[in-house]
Image 1 (cartoon, rainbow, N blue to C red):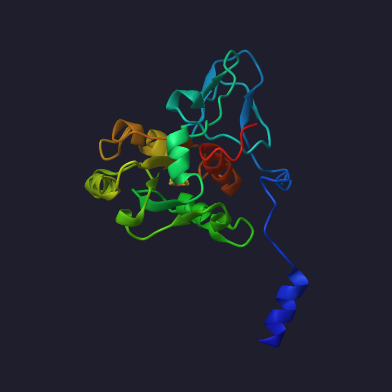
Image 2: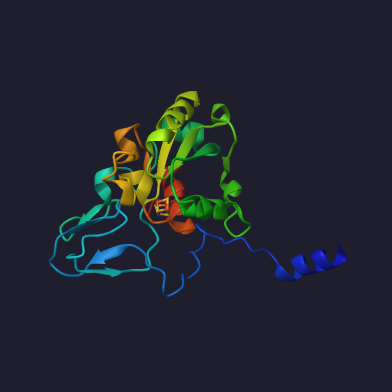
Length: 225
Ligand code: SF4
């Protein structure tokens, strides 16, 4: 026990100060928000694979979550519109306490794993009043991962209906946003917003924990720049 306490004391506080301070530098190999470098076409961040003809380079910017599906489509002419804060009434309800139920609707588990990372001491999601709960009846919203396979559709809809109004819906990862690599399959949906209304789209495969945290804090009006 003494050894554990000594180690913890030596390690100090591991929680990042984001968003009060800048987020830690991400490794060089991290591929953040793509930038269209040439004149060629557009890219849809809501998909997992981009058009191979698009001339793109990757920045290390992790901010990519949007309020509207169409805002994930980037082109030379179109600047990215990041997620906006909820309206005043919704902020009053959810701004300081947001309970979420996670629904894994046929994904590969990588989205869920990186979502779990937000509960580690490094990110400490609960300091923002955001927590995951077991029952949809205790939740203010759902975070959906995966392409919503046919056999998960009913379970998803039942979970959604069990959450009291007003409620929030978050699509996390390319599969939930567009169906991902399964978008041509009759066994998967073509995006969560074709089934239920979505308030926040968090792209990535899987989204980096900072992308998710940044999106959630934008939705709650804690980041505006
Ligand atoms: S978006 Fe990528 S990481 Fe997430 S469930 Fe789909 S394939 Fe897996």
